[in-house]
Image 1: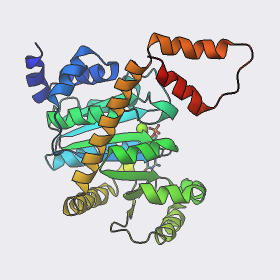
Image 2: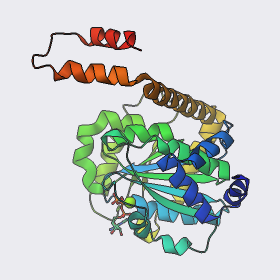
Image 3: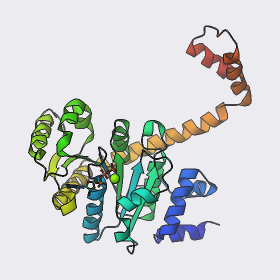
Length: 310
Ligand SMILES: Nc1nc2c(ncn2[C@@H]2O[C@H](COP(=O)(O)OP(=O)(O)OP(=O)(O)O)[C@@H](O)[C@H]2O)c(=O)[nH]1
Ligand SMILES: [Mg+2]
């Protein structure tokens, strides 16, 4: 019944891609069909994460990168994760990235997604959506997220290359979040680097990176002025360099396998959770806490009691 759907997807018809993404987000029957078709295989897309504080210029950089990749004849999908607005339906951020300039280009697909995952992090859907885009055959998948705490850590698992975009004023924040940042970035971008403190931040980052030991990949720091397209070629070159590094070190397969294992685990949790919460168990737990005087009980014994109920 959905066979035509697949053909339309494969020919990159944007309205079909949008329908497929909505199906994944909303857990419809079409999702089940798609999941049965998207098979685990060597990933052919490169997944690039662009993260950093609000307003740092992530979308402007994404925009420029899309153009750069198009000039190299690569097909590109950009997924913009909007953690602030669970009600965004895709148009608001889409406007920000000046989606219209790619309107005629079938080989560019841009979509924003509300992050509905816990703690404002990347939702579990993002990996499935990226797999769908991979299946359709886009060469490059850019995932833009606002980097606040948890999301940065999530994005690292979802992508092959992590770009952390900072601005000259980020210096103080960085001193504070040092350790975390060292761990996550494959490349640093200092955007808005026409501003005077750009060199100061460059030095802070350089010093910070000297602490990195025993790592085969040492992140580059790239200065950009996205609005003037300055530094974008260098960013592109470094992304290509990182890609080569991953290819040479089996990094792609490693990341891809890890994502797949994570998805299997998530799916198992979902399945078991649904079947675990029988009405007897739900009633038991609700009755238990309805009692006026809560009994002293440990977590492990309540879990044991729950398991004993069928
Ligand atoms: N001066 C200057 N402004 C820039 C530069 N790059 C982007 N901007 C501006 O900074 C503002 C924010 O840019 P965006 O690309 O929307 O930033 P963002 O990080 O995607 O923002 P959020 O997604 O809202 O977190 C816009 O007004 C851009 O025009 C730059 O290199 N220099
Ligand atoms: Mg943005």
